[in-house]
Length: 107
Image (cartoon, rainbow, N blue to C red; front, side, top):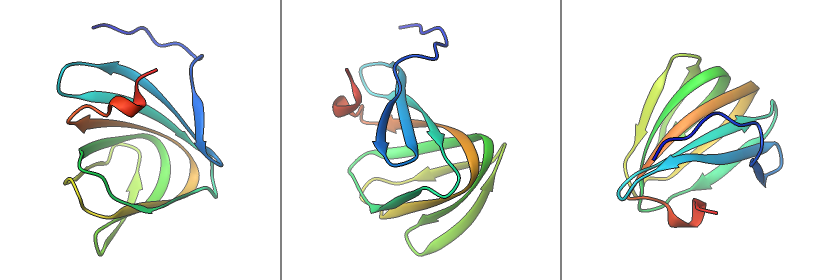
């Protein structure tokens, strides 16, 4: 599968948090998140391993009991079934890959 960048197709999943699935395969799925300053991703967990990269902006990411100030160029990995949350400190763009593929993120 190949995908060209396109400004269409984003959906708001929480106030101030937009996402779009960019590309996926049999075992993984990549999403782009546009995060508005002041928005919050409440603590949650899922079976999927989640690997991310901060393209731009700044957020406070909590993985389990550890807090990380994330800036452009930083990366993270969240094992499956580990609680995580985020507080968006600046308008941000992040890419995340999920495994196994999150079928609920497919259109």
